[in-house]
Image (cartoon, rainbow, N blue to C red; front, side, top):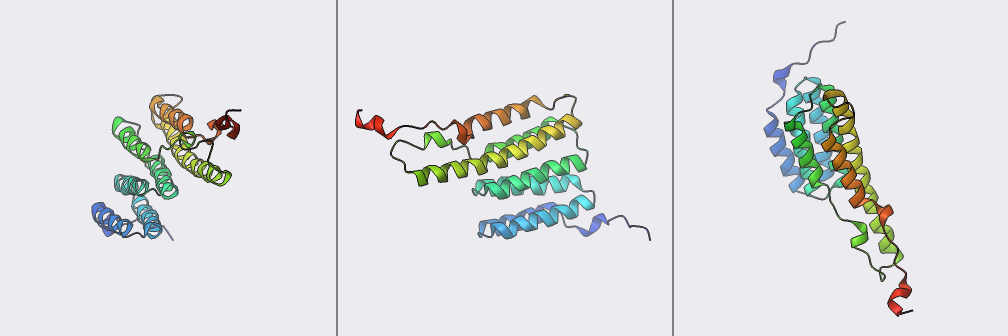
Length: 189
């Protein structure tokens, strides 16, 4: 039994799915939308309609990140890079621009600028936990993009812009650079 080539005509135009999923997200069903992004993009990939899968995933990653859904947005961003690899999409300015747009939507809220000597341990723990989630999501996305660019660009070590984005995000967001301020400094001691 031979495996049939997927039929390309069975899928609707990608923009109709983008519009539908944007509506689902705006109604507040972000998890449901996430599952739909994954399943619909997989259909486009199996039909070898990589450009449309990229459009869908780019839209989803950006929209989820705009709504503060870092875990969902980063998952779709990594899937975006997976499609670049599966489709053997070359590293060019258009794709780098799309990666940049996703990157810029990752929250950039430095932990150490939000804390002072009066913050309690609970607030500090929560802030560090949120920073780790942001850092993990963005760095997973950018590391995948660097690996893709190593294979599909002329740069042996991947595109330098991607390395810069990763370094900037790690530097600005890493909870490990939080400076502990002793409560005694406020007492004049």
